[in-house]
Structures are given as structure tokens and as C-alpha cells.
Length: 191
Image (cartoon, rainbow, N blue to C red):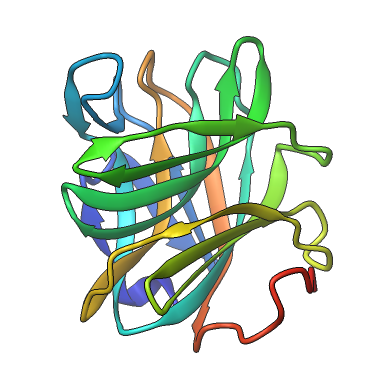
């Protein structure tokens, strides 16, 4: 699946081998727009694949987060002002689930992740103007991370994302990327 992806902000060190994408983050990379800090950052690493219309995308992420704001997960992007990133982010001394929805300006939501933050899965479903994010510790149970409005677009870019706003050198392995028709499961069906 990674062979159809293209880089936004290609890292200096990366490879695709054995069905996995491995990368090491460059120095001071991030995605953020204005809120609280007042700055705009569009320098994070994103390996996106074009998707037409509605979809569900799923991804496995392995990393060892160590410094403030180290992060890796999935991104759904329309353009530089309309996107979401979600995954694990190291904040205040511990890894947490995090998501940033950007519709001209960024928001940020965090929460506790009960599983091994060094090996988790994330799912994004975009359908009928709604984005549903789910995270899983085991690939079987998928609690809801976020449900929010998201712009309807003819084309989205979706794929792995990693950033290190305070440093360089986070090593991340992404695997098991799947992109399918959007899930039609009930909202609280966590399978």
C-alpha cells in the first residue's frame, strides 16, 4: 500500500522494506496552525495516498517516544488549512492519545491510552461530512477517540504522519496500512 504514497516533507532517513515504512524524524518538524502559540508549522513528515470520496483507513505504528511532543500516527489532509492528525504524542512526561483537527486553525485533544503506546493501531473513517477516529491496542477492540465534522472533498490524502517539534531522531515503523470503503458499523460497535 505504501507504494502509492507521496511525501510531504520527506525525512532524510526512510525506507520501505517487508511491507513496512521506517523513518527517522528530522529536526523540529510539526503540523500546527495558530491556536495558542500563534505560529504556523507545516513541516511534519506525511506519506499520503490520494483517496477519492469516503473511506476508512487503518494503520499500525511502532515507536519509542521520549521527548516533549514526539508524535506518530495517521493524517487525513485536504490542504494546508484542512486536516487532522491523530496518534500517540509524548506530552508532560508520558505518551498520550492525541488528535489535532485543523479547519483554518488547530485544536488539540488528548487522552489516556491504556495499551502499549509503543505498538498501537489507529483508524480514520471519513463519510458524509463526519470524521471518526478510533485507536486500538490489539487490533480487535477499537474505542472511539474522536467524532467531529470534517469537510466533504472530492479527494483526500491519507497515510502515516510523524513529527518531533523539539528535536530530531524519533524512529518510527508504520505497517498494515489499509484503505477501504467507509465502515458502516454502528457508532458504538468497537470491532
